[in-house]
Length: 384
Ligand code: C2E
Ligand code: SIN
Ligand code: SIN
Ligand code: FE
Image (cartoon, rainbow, N blue to C red; front, top):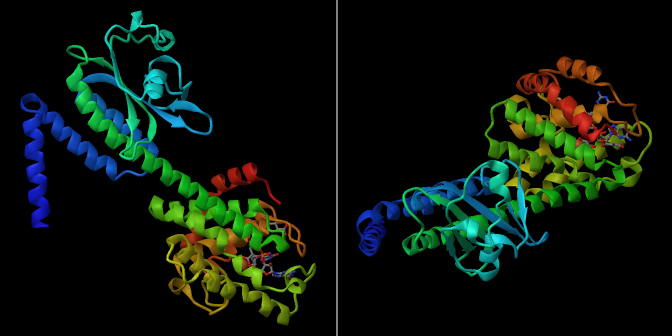
């Protein structure tokens, strides 16, 4: 620790020497940016922070960031030029396209006489572009992720000194942007795999994609309403679809029976909770661990009369108390081979009646407060 602190101090001094005088403020801003950007994972926050620091360090009015979309082969921007819409550009047109394809920075101090400049956006926004600096966003490992553009330096014109600072900033920015894009791709992939595997597990049962999406959204909304933080709620949304994965282990003659189950058969059926737990329990992945608890405990009841262990009240993990309600609500709203669907008012009456019996009263009252949102989900995803 001691040595690390010393190291940081020496580095800061060296950096100050190199960019002496007025530039030491900028060096400090670069450090602030590097520190705060590396902690961010979501792309919008990374872009916002980058644009903010770019303007401060280069002392200019606006910054726009254009991200390369490999699939569409276009550069897109959200934080661009004071427009709210997302802009898409061709990778070989205009100043941004030039910087992207040549992979080198440019300064343009008289844009209206530069043939690469497109004055349409100025016309649309009523903004007057006086000078431009634009740099490719290239990561440490040499990947180009897009272009950053600064517009209208306040006091003077952009110069070589600006390029030096902008290059340091844009390397940090490129790495943060690449990380954020990878992170969101991983999350999207993970979510789709979880839902699709859960459907595979319930294929025989004809549980639909929409049932899993609906019940996981209700779970998320209830958790949010109960005051859990966004990260936990999001984890719950991803873990909830796995609750019935253990139905994989239930024989067809029981799972597919078109009529009421005998007591013996229902006992077999109840084992889906334990099978699900066994499939997921040894994982190191947070979402799967939460999925294991949910699989095991989603048929426990608040009054202790549930299965498989007859846990009571707070002994049941909160994620399972939430999923228990979300799952039953959607099961009741759905048509099953062995029963007709309930209407929403019937379901609300049922849930109220079961408060403190089947369901945790705190979960029930959160659910009752989000009924308008539940109705919207039903409109969007339909009832089976
Ligand atoms: P599922 O059909 O998805 O139902 C999930 C849970 O929703 C049920 O858990 C139950 O708590 C609730 N539920 C569903 N339909 C009704 C209903 O008509 N009335 C009431 N009061 N609650 C309802 P449960 O009972 O532990 O059942 C677990 C799973 O066992 C069910 O999942 C289903 O796959 C199967 N199952 C339960 N009963 C029968 C049955 O009579 N026949 C057949 N073929 N399968 C059944
Ligand atoms: C479902 O069909 O997804 C719910 C069934 C259950 O909770 O056992
Ligand atoms: C659903 O799980 O929402 C549909 C159930 C079914 O069709 O049996
Ligand atoms: Fe279940």
